[in-house]
Length: 452
Image (cartoon, rainbow, N blue to C red; front, top):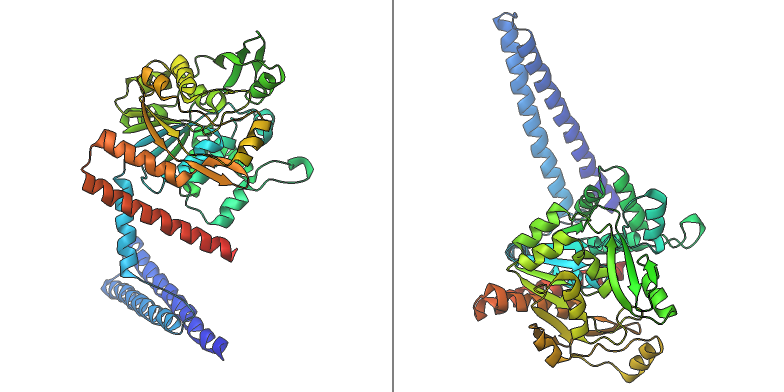
């Protein structure tokens, strides 16, 4: 019975749409005749004018009746339409607030950067992620070698972190093939590779993918040059390739003594430079110190513009040391590396973890050659860098990561208090509404994941 009730108004909609098309044809025919055959006598002209008027009347009736049929379907529950004025008002207010949010440039690569972006997009839409393109391992390395394109992996992760997509779409783009010639290759990498194939350059491909996925802010590669990494270890060995450097440092039991990019004169993207010049805050990290963050600073125009900038320059220290890159490093050691390769005024604030981790996890990480990065305040102060300490630990599936929501909250609060100098009331209002946005989006994602 219900099906019958649905079919009847559904057929009516189709009939009125067809009637509307008939009206459009009448208008088109009448208008064409009036324009192209001006030699017709008065009676013919009156006829074709009447034809136009009739066509307009038919079109009006068709549109009116189609809307009535659609409303009938809505009233019977077959088309569910919900207009909640409070929700619409809240949505508009949220978007307005995000547009007015601070202009933040984030510099880095790897999973650490994308983790931070997931939290940050709920506080401002003025985000530009400048991402390294030095990856030569895994699926990205294969595509780089086979297709001669820049590695898509870190770019893909940042796009997905800032994207407004359903969970099923994100799962699809993060899916890795398990067998065959595409084994271990990410579908998202292939998607970006296809975009690169139909675009003039890699930058355009990134922007097209960002548009398709409704990205908040911008994601840009640091350079379009075919950039590679090279390190000299303390034992004198020269290691080439992002994926090989930490492995060889561990294997040879020798720390990194010097670090460079090839070509050394790699040219930064104009969009990256412009974003840095307009930024309220420039954030470096979190991520691998040598293979994710430093390569961007070795692109000379990037480090030069960061040093010149009046923006708040912040480094997010890693929670754990990374074997082969930062073994035995304290927070100040990370800052010294950034200063060595980026220049004296590259950082003025460091956001560091002060949270603890369970002893069992400590032991697990120690077996892998990693430990908590110690906050050595005295050494940091001697470098002229101010400290923002916070418990940023999040334990997920036995791994220690930055808590994306806490990290984003600390970042925005610091930027607004130290740089934008808003009064306390506005800060509280902004953070409250932004947190509400974050909670609502997480609830919606959980709901969608439950459906899937």
